[in-house]
Length: 427
Image 1: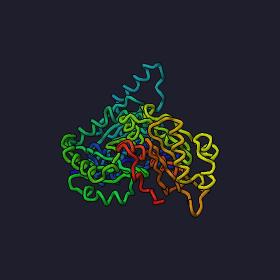
Image 2: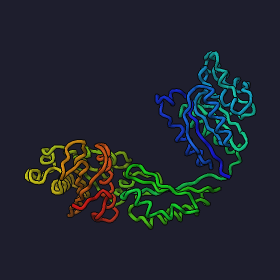
Image 3: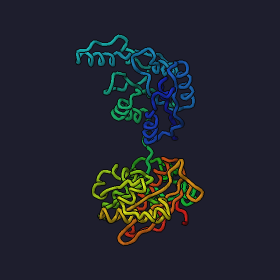
Image 4: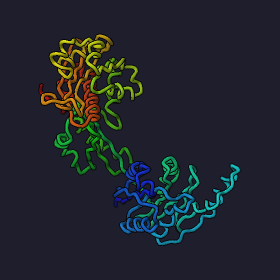
């Protein structure tokens, strides 16, 4: 039987938006790996009746509830009281935990603050969880198929307690023998609907749960399976991953937690290729993404941000007559930019982009999102017209990713590719 869980972040500051709740996303992954199906995340204010009602509702559904926050020493820290009420038991002082907390203060020569004993109270029948990262004690309590685990709201404390004690306590409390294992491939170059159509049969496999997760233009094709070991899980997941790679070919740029820029830089380094960029509408974003990758100095030589026409002429040798006749956003200008940066840098592989990011500057012939991308490799230069959707930031971001993919495909095949992105439009 699969166990279900939910996460409740406690605190007015979270509910009112003064603090962004990152704990719930982190805990959801951890609970998923333990085999729990996370039903929902919830943010609740510091009012005890409201919190008690939410906790009891979840417990009545048989959920395992993980709470964050509201266990400090002040009067508005009410999570312990609400949990005890929801469980229907008394809140008791943990004398051993109190003694240890007092010893910690004494060892540092500090006076024990009045009221701090509140931090060592827990519901009757619960299991104490030591907090080596702060002063508030934590606990886990079982109720039928569900229960409650109480953690602090400070991410550093929460993650430390979880890793050192809470995770192990939950495994023992529930007798967990299976956990979720997952694997994924990352994909660039086609719309989500097309990806779904190509791999629908694999996503609907009864052997594992499949999903498409979208990070703008990059998509994660992910499967997970409940198993007792990684070896057992890989027997299923490996077949699905291999099948997806067969179906999608070079649209798959990596397996696992690897970004497009990481995959591109790694491949360029493996092939021993150096790169230079000539950027107009992206304003240096291609180089920025590449230099986010450790080891990019082995491949990236330089990037010229030639935003004005004068800079394109002076820095890259774009002819004034080319700009006058065809405009800055044109095949001719993009190709001259690519040739120019290749001549100036001596790099093996050079990419150039020029376009209209918006919100102004567009026309009927060249609307916002019109981008010309050119690449020079050896003695060959090729260009592609892109119609990139989105606002100014998205146009820049997506164009930079299309440029990275062009570099990746060129390195992969040793020649300039025909197709670089689903935003391509016949000129």
